[in-house]
Length: 401
Image (cartoon, rainbow, N blue to C red; front, side, top):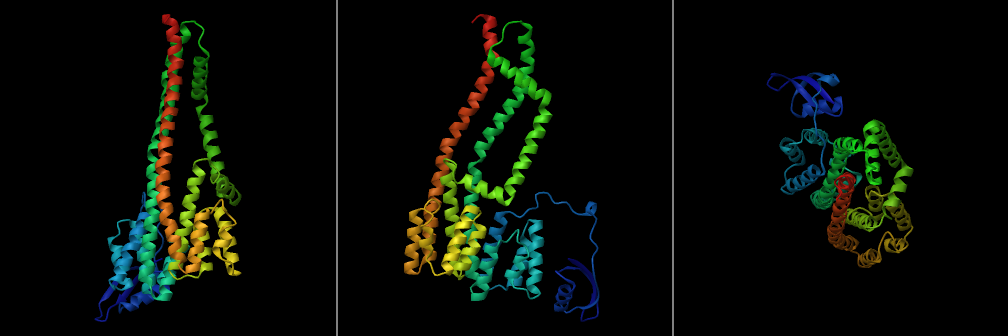
């Protein structure tokens, strides 16, 4: 919230301005810490929607969070006070939306709120994993190390997601080209040629009739097809947003040929890295498992991790419970966890799993692309060849070739 104030300094000068705070009491405390005697403090009226500043592409990216974590860790290591570090970061952050959030966090911390509590007020930016790592660092007096853990963890996650997105650019471009070719042929080329071919009066090949028929259907009823496509897409999207839909999709995703094994590697790597980071940060294993289940991103793995957590609370070993799920957790992972439990270095064992699977994921991405790209090119070639054949076959008949 933003408050407008009028105050007097120690020298008696009148100052006016505005301050952002979570409440009137927090705003008053903030001004008093600056040695101001407040004479007027009232909440500013919210601007109507038409007067508000519109921000396009104002979201906070994963890269912004990575940079925030790394820079805060470096400043804290340099023994710069937390409030000063946050203030400096707010000033140098280019993303206006994120800058406002950091400013609010700074005010909360300056008002006496812990950093973890201030971060927890922005759950869309800072996950429960992030907040609990910071809370663990605050409790153990190792906030700098916890921020270091977070920065490295987020950088690995960012690297993985960036590589996957980058790998999909070329296939996506091919799909766009296919759709563009189909639209141009069906709406512009085929209608013009169909008039010429119809005027000849000859019997057209079956393929040409099918293509001309599809072209007429699309040109006449494209709006119905568009409504059905958009409507169907919305219904499917909303279904997969439901709890039942998400569970079904998560199960199906793990069983898709070629894609399923690759996705499993991502989830196993994410499980191992999150659990390793949380345990290394000082959280109890049961709490670390609970947080890991929330951030792993798949309902199938969430159910398994919940089962592991309950068994661990009863005194069972993690590796013994994981062994019940060989399809989701390969024997290699289970064995590595078992070694870590026996030696008391489970966080390091899990990080070895992460390092192994990250290399496997990189190789799998390259292998998938080596298969997917030729398949898409062949598919595009077949579509173009069929369309060209539908046009050229009647012409060959007319010329007697």
